[in-house]
Image 1 (cartoon, rainbow, N blue to C red):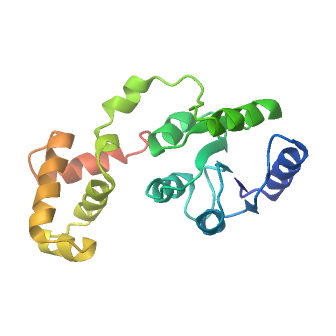
Image 2: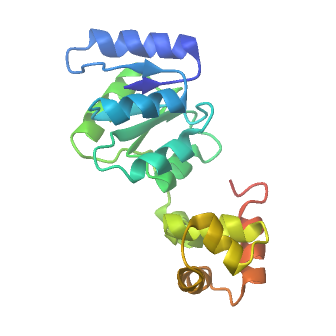
Amino acid sequence: MLADANPLVLSAMSELFDRDPRFSLVATSSTAEGFLGTVMRVPVQVGVIDWNLPALGGAKLIEVLRDHAAAPRLVVYGHAANDLPRMAMSAGAAGFASRSGDVESLLQTCLSVAAGSMVFPFIDVRELQQDPIQTLSRKERQILDALAKGLTNKELAQELGISTNTVKFHLSNLYEKLSVRNRAQAIAFYYAARSPGTE
């Protein structure tokens, strides 16, 4: 399945995959929501997505699909600048194909991903391991986001639908993973990680 915000790119990709006998094009979409709606109903093995897909965006789409056992393996099709391959890998994509590359490299990336490989240009994986935010579970990330809004443990419990004891358990793990001692330091870490130049 293909998803791209640019109608010309989507049309060109559709024609490319439609003509190639190695592929069976299931559907196309110009939004993340449209892509999500289709893959929840129809079996899709590999999805090619635009990182800036409206309205969710590529990173959020990958995160939502990570929790579904039958989710397609995703290839991000974008510009290799701005650290995008590393961000795609961090988010959980299975591959990255550059828009400036030739069309055959996009097809080969999809074939390799369908066969179970991960396909990325060279990425220094030490940078991935240095970012403690990447070690957080989905629930811990939700708690960190909520924590940054200044919510109390009781408010966190209500917002996430868990007990205050469970909130304390997650906070303890969160502090340990971020190497901080309290919520103020965790919030400071959160905003430092989101400052310009780190995304």
